Amino acid sequence: MEFFVDTADVQQIKRLNDMGLVDGVTTNPSLIKKAGKDHETVVKEILSFIKGPVSVETIDETAEGMVKDGIRFSKWAKNVVVKIPMNAEGMKAVRKLSDLKIKTNVTLVFSPLQALIAAKAGATYVSPFVGRLDDIGESGMGLIEQIHEIFKNYSIKTKILVASVRSPTHILEAALIGADVSTVPPDVMLKLFSHPLTDSGIKTFLEDAKQWKK
Ligand code: E4P
Image 1: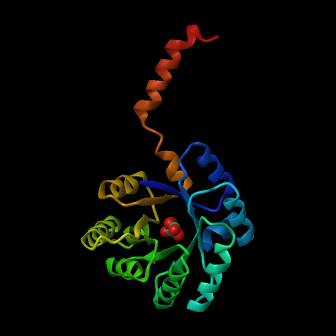
Image 2: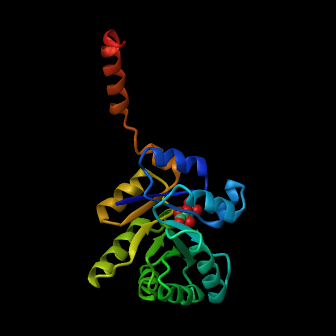
């Protein structure tokens, strides 16, 4: 399973990239607002050092506007993936961008049939939001299982990009199901390193090695 980092914080992306944890990046307007920089500036900064897929969300409600945004973003770098919301206008845009060989990521997916529609429109990725479903008492991972099964039934090539990840458990469960990608907030990604037995083991080994330290 690939790991994308779900942030527009350039320093955090650099830090995680140095640890070899970044296969790609996902952004959205809220994450870019949080980064406190202009949309184009921050995306271009990320594109200057990330060579894997970088999702950039369109900011228009019409299919025409989304396609226009998508064509503009795709000129910034060849690893740009245009992020499009799941609705009728969005699917018109995905079809058009897919005809133009521009990669897309359909976002705000909350049902298996939305994922199927996105795949049929030609989406490169679908982003089911597991955390937001859990928040309203539904099963985020149940959704991933259903999408995985449907895509398998029809040999669909669209990749399942697990989004709205809130914990390492989400990542573990996504990997066990066989999802293609998890996009993970930096704080959750850092938690993947720790285990209390690793920490105490390192402490003991360093303690025992003290005598030989030059
Ligand atoms: C990523 O593509 C999504 O925009 C993001 O994972 C949403 O996460 P949230 O539900 O924590 O805002």
